[in-house]
Image (cartoon, rainbow, N blue to C red):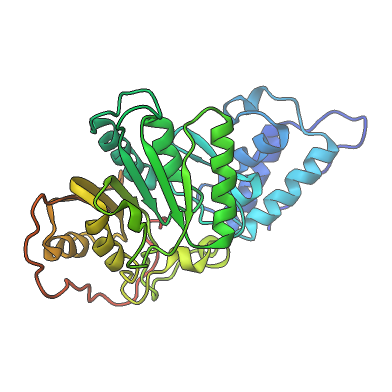
Length: 333
């Protein structure tokens, strides 16, 4: 591992951020961190308490700050997630508190959240004063940190947003983020502790939901994931059984019951599910307008559908993915 710069002594000149960052970037690159320069800058900005874009204008690091920076770089080189070190993750227009016990939201999921925001805004009543009138009802399943739910609540403030999470550890982060955003002036969301595979999930909302969004655990069990995911992300938030569909299948079934006629569904999935998930939606018989969406890298990322106004017969069988073990491709889940 490349050593960091020598510490300035007390009373001496501060160490320029550019010098510390250059050495830290080499340390991170040697440890296999892909965006080593960017992450070294983000850690330096975190220690100095400045935005990354103003790092070049910041005062140098004191001996104490360099000690702290050194420790953070060492932890990142051991593949502890950057977001655990800074305590936050950016998601659309939000900064969310994250740490051990909750899945760190990925940039790819911003696309699904944006789709949900757009659909919520299209619902009659979406332009009304928050809390007044018949605004859209949005449900976020497998909410984790609350990224999707809180983005919708912020960007479509007339919506009533319900976030569902099972994990006690993740629920603590979800409730913390929900309270922080409400204190900041966003419309409060409703947090429900429940298992999304429960056939009676949100029974009181049956046939009433306008937009249902879900970023479930979907990575097939045999997939090799990076250390940040394998060691630090909750297993139950990453892996979805042998084929990655153990949670998705019951979610699709329950969503069809929760959605009002004409209501819409968006589900993120593994990049091997680009044909599988649309096929499952079509086979269910209660969905129409099934569409697959790709991320900015061109990989299949999430599928959407609309609840039929009249149910069609459910077709038997499921599309299957027969590929063997593979390695993590997208860095997201």
